[in-house]
Image (cartoon, rainbow, N blue to C red; front, side, top):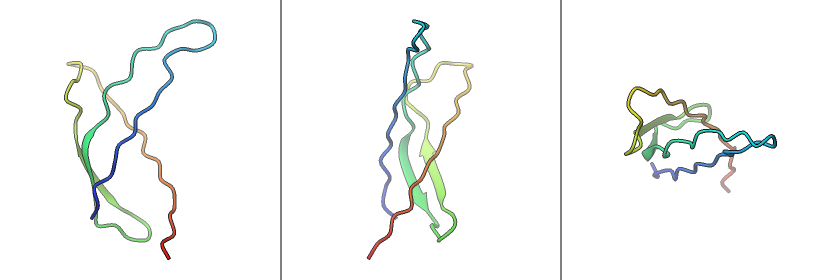
Length: 68
């Protein structure tokens, strides 16, 4: 299975001038396995720098890709 590339992006400022906290570093070494037409198993290592005691959530999105 090919290794996936991680992409992280965020907006840290909104129109009213309120500054949001910087996002954490992206997860590392993302690997997909056991892929089927309807599912895939993803594993990754946590970011190198994490703020102790803080919880992190990740949103996973996908796009169907047709291979000919």
